[in-house]
Amino acid sequence: MKNQYKFVSAEEAAGYIHNGDVVGFSGFTPAGAPKVVPTAIAERAKALHEAGQEFKIGIYTGASTGDSLDGALARANAILFRTPYQSNKDLRAVLNAQDAHYFDMHLSHLAQELRYGFLPKPKFAVVEACQVTDDGEIVPTSGVGILPTICKLADHIIVELNRACPESMRGMHDIYEPLDPPCREAIPVYHVSDRIGSDCVKVDPSKILCIVETNRPNEVGCFAPTDPVTEKIGANVAAFLEAEMKAGRIPSTFLPIQSGVGNIANAVLGALGENPHIPPFEMYTEVIQDAVITLMKEGRVKYASGCSLTVSAEKLNEIYADIDFFKQHVVLRPQEISNSPEVARRLGLITINTALEADIFGNINSTHVLGTKMMNGIGGSGDFTRNAYISIFTTPSTAKGGKISSIVPMVSHLDHSEHSVKVLITEHGVADLRGKSPVQRAETIIENCVAPDYRDALRTYLKSAPKAHTPMNIDTCFAMHKAFAETGDMHNAKF
Image (cartoon, rainbow, N blue to C red; front, top):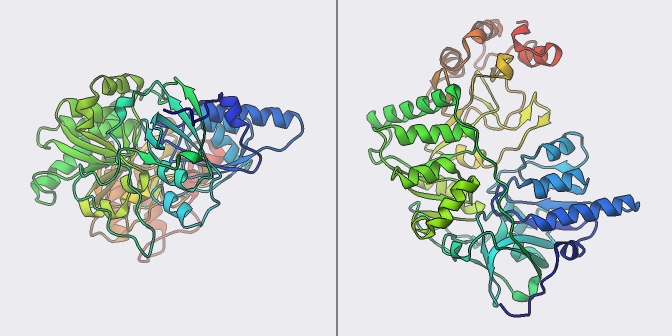
């Protein structure tokens, strides 16, 4: 690396960014997200606020990030607007207090909508890399996100060169950015393992404003162990897919899996890996997590394409220690490719995502508590659900010790409509919604997925609704939400 690049402290790098600037950050989840520069920006914001000066910035990321980014900037009241997804509790509090603007987006849309000019252009790109070459090649670390697009659009690039991630990561990435209409061509991914781009992001070296050297591990936390509920959900998913294979509706060679992130997703993947009737399978997904790495080493996952390695520190060290093996079985792509609806439909993905709330007709709420408070965001679930071969949503049937039923008469916020949801699965069973009318869907969901102590209430609601194609009682469709808001227990709902 030549001396053409200016090496500075995180504080000096943060000093280039001013009130009102729009900044794009690399990474996808805490994987690949910069750490020391955003923390320094937060400290700069605090100092300016104490001096009576305004300081807030607009923020684009790939998805959620680590606490050093979203958390630090939220606590510093330094966020003007934020998109497309978040999961930090302090940021969530800021958004729900209306102290920052947040617009929830499908993750596959963000990069292209930035290029189309629908959103303010980022002035700065702050990106984490494991290598930067003399001629402007930036090699990402464990997450890609919107890195290629923000590097293209930004006037200036600030690189966090993270020595905690080895340069041997080079070769795991496949960086491809489609042309924009009217010149866009098909994304040439025809198999999960196809590589179609470069192993790095190539930029004009003169755009690299400075480099900040770091040695900071990812901020991905450990996943909670499975419990009887998540284990049963996983077993139900595996049994359903096994039955679909036996019925000839899934090829005997199986189909690629897309899975959301979290404890339920880990349990589902574990159950698929343990089922002797399901052959070794591939994954075309956004987040590659611990269960995938374990199954890959056991030969149960043949290949995984994703946007990030959102794995625990232990698993990430396993990957680093056997990097040549994993570079033959893992590829990391930008999110508009990992989440591409075009590719999802072509490959025939079996998609498995988690619902915050479902209603008896199969509509899904992925984002809002009681219809008003943002939890995390829609993420990539919409990218995959609408274009799946089979779209599955999972959820525990209850929450808050049984005081909330996850299945209600009508969702309090709609993210995925009944038209996109083929299967709903809880620990109690499977509701196959394909080819069913609204009333048939309601009866199937109540009998198979609802917690036993809520079934009679939902049956009563359904009977109380005036006869119609989609029966709805406008007086009581939110009675369970109202009961929880007033008494703390949905069991107190009156129908």
